[in-house]
Image (cartoon, rainbow, N blue to C red; front, side, top):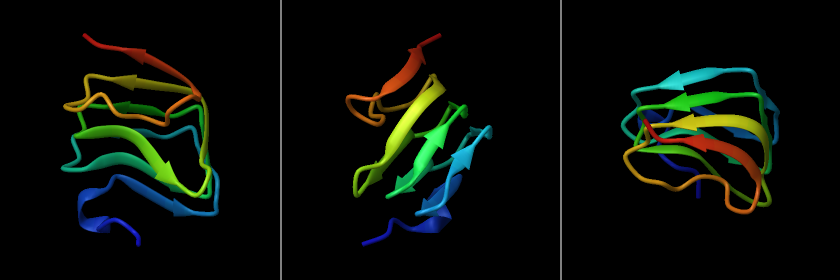
Length: 81
């Protein structure tokens, strides 16, 4: 089931999410469903980057999220200010 797009910054179901800046969303900054998230900056969201169906996240910068969840076991750079 897809999350509500009213609370998301960027949602992709199968397409690449590349080089975006997402901030101040009520839910996930980026939600990748069977999609790659690469080179993105996500800050001041409820959740930085998450997904389902084997999302892949590389070289993303996740800052100051309200919850510490992000693509688990992926190479996601995190820095809390």
